[in-house]
Length: 194
Image (cartoon, rainbow, N blue to C red; front, side):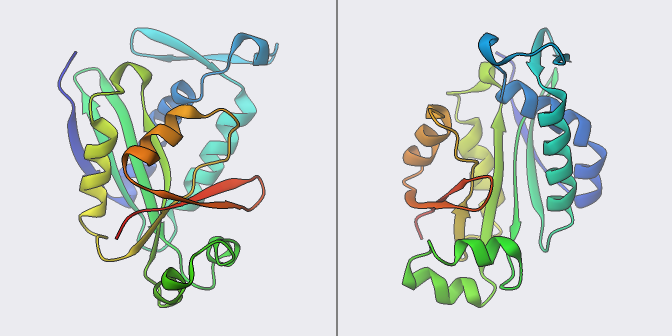
């Protein structure tokens, strides 16, 4: 397995790599055969081909473009000799943003004050290609990203996907505490240890 190198991306770099990020997203959310439909299209990545419905890819790109514009957007990427193999990004949720409003009901009282003071950092997307998992890539991405946000209230907000064992396994390994579900479509809130 090729060595993986981490790098922090500026807003501009993240926007320039949005197609590569969407390809990794597609690979990480690969459809099972019973979920594939006629309008699916192949998304090639390295030596493998992954399938994702075009609509899901477009929805991800729309969310990603909005997230890149959020306050204090921060992103780290994992690369190998073959290209992008993973990334983690997030942003600071201000008290007047929809994410903060939706999260307010699930935050514990101790975190609410810090969050109201503008110290709520949301980890929005974590992606690591399946062939690079279980090699501490996700943990290294988290450590590099949170080096700037270590004193903040950090909440991970993955989409609530039934049976998404990989995401839950990572969050439990990071000693995160599940706070509950919020928003539409439903997402989960997991509090990172202080």
